[in-house]
Length: 449
Image (cartoon, rainbow, N blue to C red; front, side, top):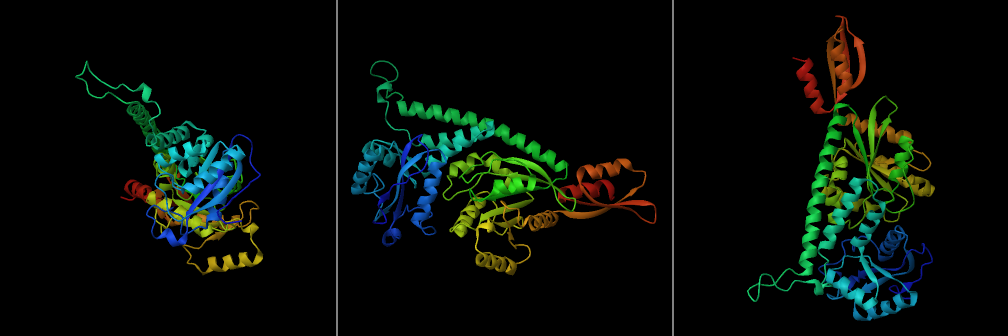
C-alpha cells in the first residue's frame, strides 16, 4: 500500500464515526510552501498521525479510518488536491463517517468547501483540541477559558448560512443604506459574549493573585509541573502528594490546575502545582485564554519539565514545550527549570544506561533527574533536586532576637522558613531563616536596623 493510502482503525467507542487525515508536504515541495505545518521538519507524518488519532479518541470518537495524505502543494480552495477530495469522499460514504479530522490548520473557506464535498463535519487541529478542552473543563474558570478560546476561534468562521434573516435596509424608504447582515449580527453577539467572559476572567485573575499573595505570606515555595500532554505529570503529582488526581494514558487527561502541599525530607514545605499539558501547534488562542491558569507556572519558584523518554519523539516534544514556555516569557536557560526524564521503566537496560551517562555529563544546575512516576523509582533524587532548586531561588539570613521577643519569633515563623534556632553566648536568640528576596528585605527592615 502507498504511504498516503487510508488504513482502517478498529478502536474507539461509537459516539461518532470519524476519519483522521494527516496532510503533509512531500520534501520536494516543502521549501516552496509558505504555510507548511509548523511541525513538518521535526516529526515524521506517521508519528503525527498517531497523535492525531489519540486526540480523536480522547473525545470518544470511533475512528473508522486514518491515513497520511501526501501533498505536492497546498490547494487554496480545499487544502488537498481535487483527486484526493474525491477519493476521501468515497471513503466517508463507505464508512458512514460523520466527522473528518484534518490534523492541520485550515481556513474557514477550506473547511466549508470540504464539508460540502464530503457531506460530513470537518474539524481541523485547533477545533479538535478545543473540543477536547470543552469535554475536560470542570471548574467555572476552566469552562470560561475554554468558551473564550472557542468563541475567538468561531468568530473567524462565520459563513453566510442565514441570509434569509438579514435586514437588507436600514432607515425608511429608499433613503436607508444596507442593513445589518446576519453574519454581522452573529459577530456582534460573539464579541459581546467575549467581552463578558474576559471581564469574568479578569476577576479570576485578581482572585488568583490574591491567593498567590496569601501563599507568599506563608513561606511555601511553588513547584510547577509542565510538559507535553501524556508525559506523566499527573502520575508524578500523585506519587509526590499521595493524592488521587485523574491520571490516564490519554491526551489532555488533566485540564484544571491542582495544587497540594508537600513536605520534603529535610523539612522544607512546598506547594506542588499540576498544570494542563502542552502539545505541538497548541492554538495561540488557548494560550491566551489559559493565561490565568498558566500564571501559576510563571510565578513558580521551581519548574519541573516532565519528559516522556520512552516516546520516540521525546526531543521534538521537548522543543514544543519550550516554544510554549517562551510565549509565557520563560526561556529554556531559565535557572528555575529542571528536566525530569520520566518513564524509564519502559526503557531497555542499554537505553537507561545511555540516558544516565548523558545526564551525568551535564552541569549540576542543568542535570536531569531520571525517574519512573509509575513505579516510584528515582523519587528520592527528585525530592533532593526540588530542595536544591527551592534553596537556589531563596536567601538564607541569620536574625538575632531577644529571648523574650516572642512576637518577633512568631513573625519569622509565619513569613519565612526557619532552618535553625540557637542561643548565642550573649543570651540572644539566633534564628536562621530562608525566604525569597522580597521577604528578606522586609526581615532586614524590621529586625536588622
